Length: 173
Image (cartoon, rainbow, N blue to C red; front, side, top):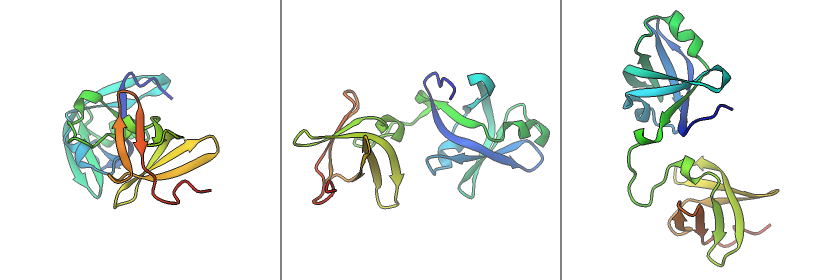
C-alpha cells in the first residue's frame, strides 16, 4: 500500500476506451460526475509513488468516467495505466451540506450508544439505495447501523466519535 501523502482514493482505471488515449475510471463513490468535474488527478505508481496528471477532458459514460489525460494521445500510452488507483487531494472535494460526511472521514471512528456503550469502529460502509449502512466492528462482533437521523444522533469528526440510538433488536446476538 503506497503512502498516500494525504491523497484520497476515489477510483481505479479499469481499461482504455478507443484508440486516442482515453482511460475508463470506475468511481468508488458510484458517481462518475465527481471525476468528470476534476482538473487534476493522481495515479498510484510502482514503489509507492504517485504521478500527477492534468485532465484534458472527461465525460460520464455508463456509470464510468472516460478521461483523456494531457500528454496521452494514443492507446499505447494509456495501456500501462490500467489497474492503477486514482486519487485526489482533499482540497479538490466540494464542501458538503451540514450533516453529510465523506465516507473516508467516517472510516475508523468510534461508535457508541447514547448510554455510552462502545460498539466498536466503522470498518465499512454499504450503499443500499435507501440509506447507507455503517458496518461497525469490535473484535469478532459486527453491527449493521443504518445511517438515518433517528439512529445516528451525533457525528463528531474532531473527536472521531459517533453516537447512535440503536433500533430495537439491533444489538441482540
